[in-house]
Amino acid sequence: MKKRAVRAVTNLLGELGKVKIVDRRVKMGADLPEKTFPLVEFTYGKKKRTILIWVRPSGEPRLINEFAGILKTMDKDWYPVFVAPFISERGRELCRKLDMGCLDMAGNALLRFDGVWVDRWGAKNEQRERRMQKRLFTEKSTFVMRKMLIDPERTWTFRELAAESRVSTGEAFKVVDRLAREGFVKKDRGAIALSDPRGLLNAWRDIYRFSDNRMTGYFSLLKERDARLARLVDVDPDVYAITLGAAAIIVAPAVRSTDMFIYVPGDPTSIISALDLQDVEFGGNTYLVEPPNEGVLFDTQRVDGKTLVSNIQLYLDLYNHAGRGREQAEAVRERLLEV
Picture 1 (tube, rainbow, N blue to C red):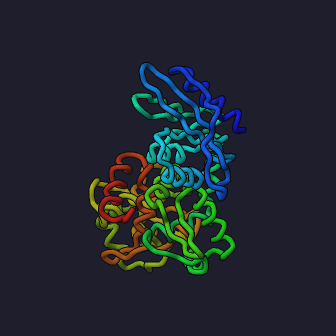
Picture 2: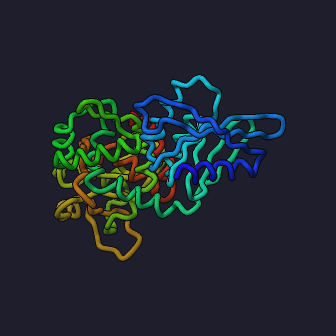
Picture 3: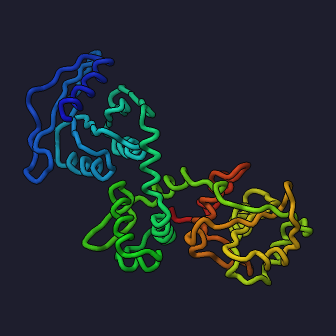
């Protein structure tokens, strides 16, 4: 793997200038997984730069952060390049943030130094990226994520996190371990906290689609949205939760919306009656949505006598929604979220 990695780096640099593999290697402490790092001497124009390569069997952000920590102990002016079989989009962005290069065996690469700019991404990694995201954002995982994102500064124990997320302690441990490998969570002697809440919310919102939910459209004889909202004040607060534009207009108004979308986890009879809903084949103005899991209704909020989804759920629902959903989502994030 190390020889292939060095060859991949030299081949890439060879497209831009003259490359020489330096025989000597950088020696590091005995406690590191790798005691030596290959060096490559790169000449381009009248400039010369030494490239320090670290090869790992995995491109987890945790290992990228570990490499960054090692570099802080080194005084030499090397340009570091992290190499692994697969590096995710998040790994690439982390390398960019840490001012290091990265390269994987599919040919994806990021190099930025002294006028050199290489940014090649997407080669053969899309399916693997989707599989990784699917493993990370399982139903039970999102239960844990919701609780942590709602209170992003909090430090948890596994027992607390499991109890409040309604998962087993073992499941909480697995979720936290996956999040830690991706660099979203830090663990310290049983204490758990988010290390990158903004990145976690971004990763989740990018794959989340409100349109995947099962919903039924109705036409309400109460054509004005405000009239429908007023009717919900007298409905049992535990049988529904408003989302999308009708919720956003209450907590963070930015975009006008006339349709209503309401999560209803059980029998919809009371909602149908209160809002004078009529069955329609198309063209409805009120949509009752079946929550895909109980986590969607974690931490609902009462505002002006009405039940709304949590601000985290509202942001997720809005972000990839049609029309001006993203604009409204960013208003919610800017005004109401701490991430």
